[in-house]
Image 1 (cartoon, rainbow, N blue to C red):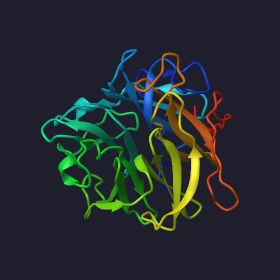
Image 2: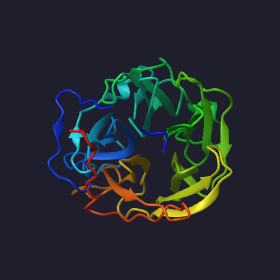
Image 3: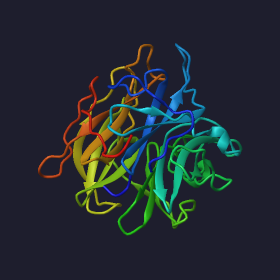
Length: 316
């Protein structure tokens, strides 16, 4: 997979004591994004701060963790909060990240301060652990740019993919999936916004490539299950590849990210398995992802153990 692949350790980093799922056990986390580079996998999550019994998402910052073996994780703190975007007023929702030209571009969902609804911003850093700063000084996507629905949260969950020819794509949306090409600077759209008709699409679109095929996974229905489409290009045409993860029992969302690391594939997701967890107090976990002989992604069960150790040579 070409998309997600820097060995850097942030200041005041600390190693989490326990392996297994959930990955982070001292705070509630959600909406995983992942980046792999130079023998280390970096995990980016939103921090759920809702109180027990809370009735809404309370999310003010993102956190980043890294691992050399998919079991021991290092806490690098917060690389940014929604306040990195001066035009935003809150909601550190789902994100994605990509490396290009020696820089790291972080695409984030926030609430816009002056344009009603959710928006997508782009932050940039010279390190995968931040700090990240606003790359534009304005939103890349705002709610008034798309008119397919009347809801204020249909421009969320950015996912960025760079194809073999160097063309970058941004996918996003709730209820309706949208995508657009990105310019090489990674901070501007390069052409019109397209919509994709997918059966019962809810949110959390994610594109990756494996052995010549493109896989578009997303959250379907509500409560959500993770399904996948398969196609010959980054824009389809798509054929249904099945359910790859069943819905959660205590939380309606699930939100996946998929990476290759040390010869194996992995899927990150969230559930509510920490004590006190629930709809607004989620927990990110990870499992190994496997393909059948025909390239079909096999169903993935959620486990407490998580994947086996897969150490990266020379990574500490």
